[in-house]
Length: 169
Ligand code: SAM
Image (cartoon, rainbow, N blue to C red; front, side, top):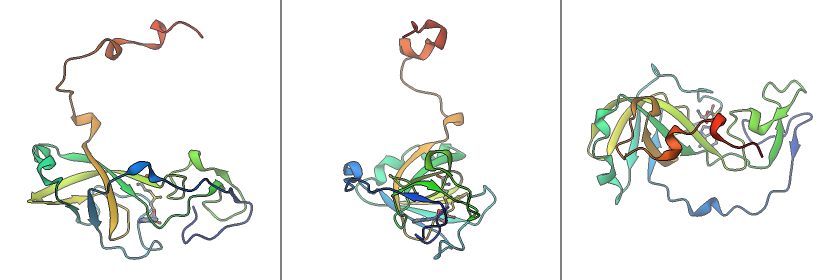
């Protein structure tokens, strides 16, 4: 994993197209104890330190119902990452692997995801455990953990479709 935007032996960068960021809207900001990438956990842990997720107006009303979920999926924008590596050397030992076979923050669209344990909801601020990002990291989305969520809408035909139902190409 590239930790401070350096290029390591045998890593491969490409010239990416100019980013447009798909018109993303950051819906909040994440507050964590970490101010350096060299101190962040590589992956959050559910018994890690309390972190705060601050939701911006006008999205605060979207928190209604969230307190019912013990765990949430958090998507965030790893804003300090370089975005041009296709091969990376996480151990900096000359061996590399393709970016899409890693959970490195260095990726063409630097989206991080974590499952977090929800501790408290107070107005526009959630307290959670399980994050691994820098203080101030922009928030992209929040969802209930898929294992805890049952769709409220009626099932659709595709919900029952399996690989055996699909005609071979
Ligand atoms: N849990 C997420 C995932 O799997 O998608 C992110 C994992 S990534 C390996 C976590 C690392 O990203 C941290 O250890 C830190 O080095 C780096 N990082 C954290 N916040 C960042 C930010 N705002 N910009 C760039 N890199 C960041």
